Image (cartoon, helix red, strand yellow):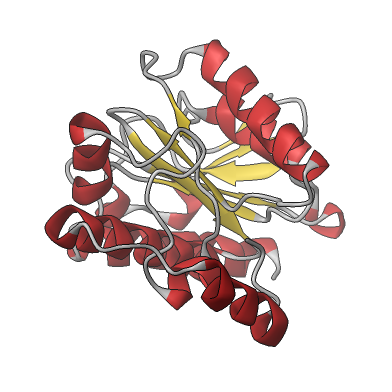
Length: 220
């Protein structure tokens, strides 16, 4: 995707998330890698921007070192996004929201430190996978980037690369190969949190999860 199309796609995804209540006010942010052929670096939504009213040319464009090239001032979560990109070569887009059920989950209590919700549906296993929680730090705290990067390295060493981490009291960070694919991960994660909060359903058993691995290549 060229940089012009990428700008438009970020704005489209941001508006969709805002209109459907995944973000509110000026919370949340989106970033994406820019191909080297188009100048490299990253696009990221500006600090205190409303995802529902993004303007393509006002997105912050930063280089690989985080130095701003153009656009409005980059989101204060830039350091966290850069840490994820560095630790996860497959990540092309990152979305952070304050999604209601996921934040509520951290207030009420997650299932486990390395899995905020149990694998209660096949699509959660296939589309999301393991999601660890990172305990509370103030927004923009550099320690969060370090802890998330460490979580990603540990998961890769176990052969279970992550697609999301959950920041306690703040919300999820999810990533994938494009803005639309990252949005799909977020949607599945938020829906699973809603289902578990309202049902406390038992997880799929080992035989059922192995079947998902065998038939669909689920990374669980």
